[in-house]
Image (cartoon, rainbow, N blue to C red; front, side):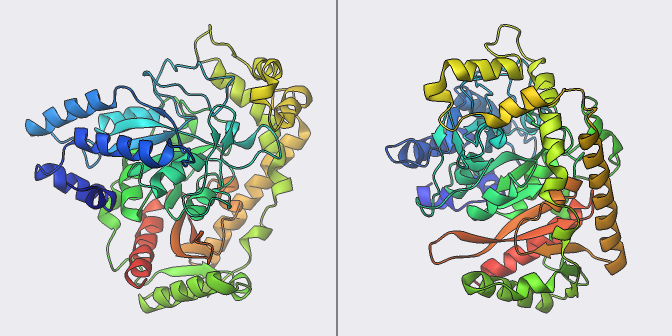
Length: 474
């Protein structure tokens, strides 16, 4: 099968090719490895991939043998997936959050999402580069830079930022270095790079996907989600990684009987009867290519049977300054708790040791400094008792109630925004981005959607139709 054909295939097409014996998992892994060598790890390459799984071909062989014997575990059987470098794999790959300080971390256990991916027959192809410690180092650190991996570049325009912190995952999908990847988000780190790189990104409801085994910087906001080339592929991956985990209390409130078969809800009639909330003022303020792209999207939504409802500006529900204390006060406790689960012989087993390591290796590790790490180490107790932190949690709760009330008052199916809004990651509501056009400088334009908590089914159903219609009318 030729390169152009494989590059254009989604997960269903790849599965069909393997079922028809036109392609094997081994050949697919080799295809992506060759592509990584040619456009990512070459001189002037994208630098999205941080590390390759040395066992990927052996795993592919095993899965090919299973297929020959009639066993196909799921739609991800034999499909190579990339992981952001915060997600543990108990194998021969490291988990470093992009840092030199954790470059020797061979995690002793798989993250819950990795266990589910392996059980589904996915192949963990490698780890992706990222903004180091999810941008919790220096305030001037560029998106997509890490001391271990260097700078990730945009596949569309080398002079523009690829955005972060799940930068490598977004670029890897956009450049077809893998069919899908996992990213993490606490403040837009899935959706911003998804939009900037023209792919689909989903930040699930807090509690839908386990956080266990992730190098998190906050308890309250960090989530793991899929990044893919289409809504359907993202839905397939989300259906595999979603589910209760006894080791993550955030997942204990989800309905165990609820289906995560998001594929079954994807159909061409998904917009019929939908009520989509839009802040009209922000739409009217758009200009240029973005105005044209959103105007086209709005027409498509109406033609497909959706009702457009003018709603309040969700950015007014909570501000960045309201929630900053959650980041700063949780970071030390959260990171130290994660580090305590690793091997005791690691170079760094606490935030303080990471700081000291960086200071000893300043020429390599501190190109952009570490003022944020110093702040959380020296200015927070790690006990989460500070009044400012507790008040920030109360403000977050009020924002949750206000967003619930907005959905109820207008009987909304989803909210549609012209850019990622911080209210969704702050409150734990699910959100996603889909590409709808591009600027003159080739940088993609994305539409941002928010749904009710644990209503990924509606979110995906509506975004699927919008994505299909935009692309078919392109």
